[in-house]
Image: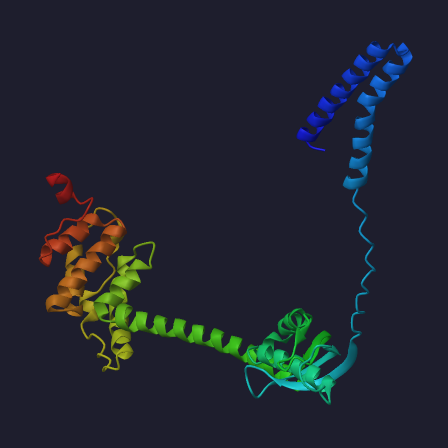
Length: 341
């Protein structure tokens, strides 16, 4: 009942009650009679309207639908696959593939049923496994096995849509002879790498001696002095002849004859190892430089020898060598450099 209907019922009820009051007073009805009629006139329409509203507004309950029976899921069939060869990334090495293949036929498959649905399921699994194994190195069989278990465990439909198949308990094994061969090849590669590194080190060492240390008698002398922590110049002078021979032999040149006048100009120079050397000691150094090199090589030798002398504490003698052979660059720490400073 809407609002307008309720208003109409109220108006009619009040109007009817007034009529009963007027009639009761006009004809002298007993009070209980016209009062009862007024109450019935007011309450009656309301009761009737609520009763009708309940009958009309009550909707019948919908009939219960019968439960729809879901079709039972198809039961898969197991088909074992054992020791099927699959080619690896290196065609000469093959893996042995084994697994349990599960499959069921699709009820809504198009066309006629396949004559060998198990063969379709196995072909689907082998096709997926072969694609992965073909990109796998023979050394990575265990890793590929884990990947296959994850890949083939998902149900998939074949291209024709007749079967759904998946696999479990996948095994991927390399023949023992091939596995042993791969271990031997890996060990050989490691040994070869170590051997190549040793050869490279030896070549670098030979080049260092041939092209740097024994490039000339002067460079050999400077190298010899640089490795002597005591700065024994007397011994350095005595080794000049040997260093010349080593340098010539290192470059396949004729070994020079022994110096016939060696006893006349080479003698122990004890003053070389003290800070204040005697007058004339530098002449032995000059003679050594002049006999070992000439031209630009002599200048380079004198410069390097001066650096070695300065490094061993003979800065004054090093500066004299520089002055004698035209190297005007002052050595750090020499008296000349300190005087200018």
